Amino acid sequence: MIFVLAVVAGALIGLSLGALGGGGSILAVPVLVYLLDQSPAQATTGSLVVVGVTSVAGAVAAHRAGNVLLGRGVAFGVVAIGGAAAGAKASAAVSEDVLLASFALLMLLVGALMAWRRLGHGDPTRPDPDKKRPGLDDPIISFSPTFRCACPRALKVLVTATAVGLLTGFLGVGGGFLVVPALLLALALPMTYAVGTSLVVISITSASALAVRAGSGTSPDWVLVLVLTIASSIAAVLGARLADRIDTDKLQGAFTLLVLGVAVYTAARAFPALV
Image: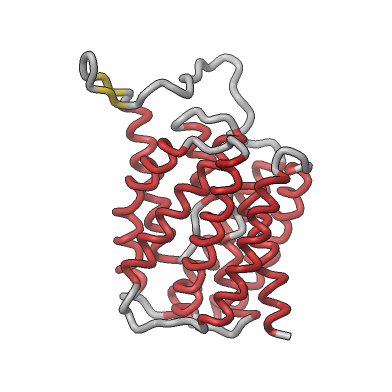
């Protein structure tokens, strides 16, 4: 039964990552803790494996479909590595109750932001017709023929990439809910490219955070993590292929309700443990 739960949960995580470029990773930790009976420390480590491998699978499928700007994704991911390393080290310094409560707070925030955007407020996918947006080929920093820096954009990328890295390392999430808006706003990528490129970023941050956690002595049940990862990876490939064909707006709406429900449940379980 537990393996069936892992397959179903993995499919849901992968579908979200592949079709929406993020969001699914926020479910990996609650799935590992409450459905697969892992400790919070084990879950945040195992989540990095699930999210990282799934993102690689989704990124490959998205790249074949022509929806990935590889150079921009790699650059954003490299900037985020420092935050991921710092977050992974910080997670080892806090108790498991604090770790799970922090994750519950993050889930509540993400669920609220998703619902806010669903209601039509602050949606970065809706372009401002009065605002000039830079082109896809416009560099942020260039040295030839003379030095040129689009510093406001560079600052946006630095701050957002570092925040994504910190969350990835500390809580074992991919940060797609931050990466996609960042790629939309800071790099002015169209939505289709932002979704695919975000998977490259998540792959890099997850791998770097996992490398820092290696040898920490906290190991999840690798068999369950493997089952969850395989199911998630297959679903991510299907989600990436279906991204241009399915109604992602309806999918995102349903996923928002799911995230809010899991967030409330996680908070109800995590917060009393702090008292």
